[in-house]
View 1: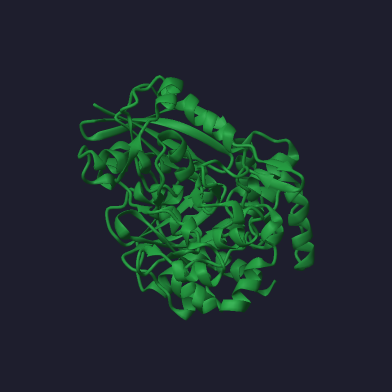
View 2 (view 1 turned 120 degrees about the horizontal axis):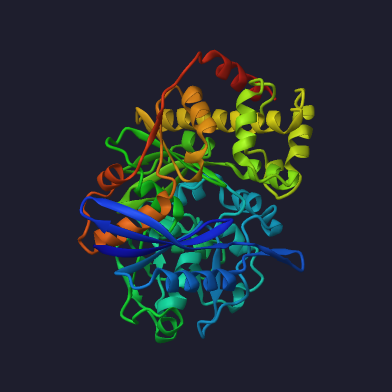
Length: 472
């Protein structure tokens, strides 16, 4: 039996999962879960990176001896190190408002097409490149490390940049697979900030003596580079048996797209705001970010409600298509009173606002399913890749109502699972690097209980709702 520790950090919580591979199956157990609570100080929203690091150390201690450790997290955010290798301040949260107006200024200066031909990224105001241009401490910095790379540095002392996370920065050339140092220089960013790239499966060092003492693990325990963007790890664990699949990595965000061999850098793709991010083995995750379950999570926080199952049962009985919203409208980005924002959006667009919790949840889920429908159809049209099935992975795979709506909205079968896709992909890349696994997706299919939702009913109500939304 081979045992791996998958450190998987999400926007609201972190976990250390222990993966055991025995024969033709992999099993996951949760060694430790810990909250990820941002902290606002002097008007700036920060990640509490030291609390996260403490959670990682505690989790590794609970996991016990393992054959390898891998780390994945959300993308775009980073830490800056000075010349002595010390962290310059807590990393800033991507939802902080410090980048307001910067993306627009850069696009005006360099041109949207220039930026897209290099990075191939969706234009989002919190992309790393725009954060760096808002960075007051940039002059003191010598090294930029994305969050998994920063934690790897603290665990091992080694410095590097994993490619799937690097591909989300806007400073990575999606065509050459290297840093776009020329673009960095044009933006006035020191190219020396960008460390040597690492690929999934590469060794990243062994535990420092102080870390070994803290965790009780041998200092010979290796850290293996995985697909460190959590979506890249999740897509690696999609249990597809054909290349003609779409995926929805469903959580706080929904990442909706296709796995392709090459980027799509056409003008149509840029105007549709699709991103080309790195995937396992040189693949491209061609996708668009959709706001995701964040809206529902904020509704529940505002209501003080914790019974998501009860809310979903009530929403399933609520009248359909009473109101729909665009989940990607900027009004839904910051934390706050989401039900009030939904009401205001509906009033502004001439719709009757949802009444009560059940109708509000129904509105949120139908709106997400419509966003998935629109995004997947755009991805198929722009890439020329036909799709036969949609795989929903991540926490949203548990949401049967949303999965049924997605099947009905897209007209495609939806296969839900695995829920812990990022941790599975993380662990399986480690196992493959050690020669324990050859076909990651086959092992996931053999190990996970998957649920299939077939399209039901008429497409016309979904088409009408989408047309109504387009007119808003």
